[in-house]
Image 1 (cartoon, rainbow, N blue to C red):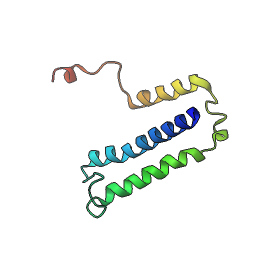
Image 2 (tube, rainbow, N blue to C red; image 1 turned 135 degrees about the horizontal axis):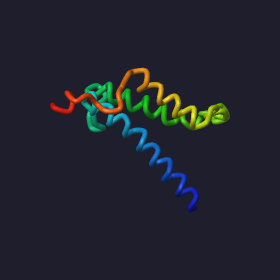
Image 3 (cartoon, one colour; image 1 turned 90 degrees about the vertical axis):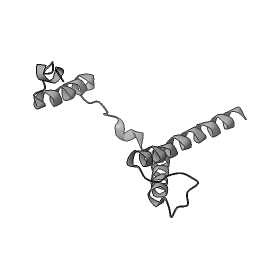
Image 4 (cartoon, rainbow, N blue to C red; image 1 turned 90 degrees about the horizontal axis):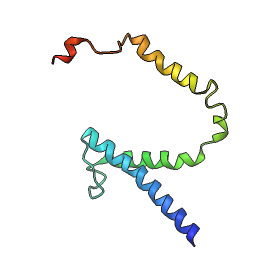
Length: 102
């Protein structure tokens, strides 16, 4: 019984987290949202909730065997790749003085 309770609680938490993404995105874009609005009044919100639910369920079907060479160059490759972005943009180590005077 304890294992069944843990599984049910985990599924409930995952479902709540997935559906909260719909609320967050709808609030961000200023769409009418809420579970007490009919789907005709908040069609984008309800469609977004369905899409988030499908994505959340799809996580269970991910094949993790495809991630075996996840970091082929190790963490050194991650940090080298991250260093390329600021170096290619010409971002200096400290902001120019005129930006600090605003």
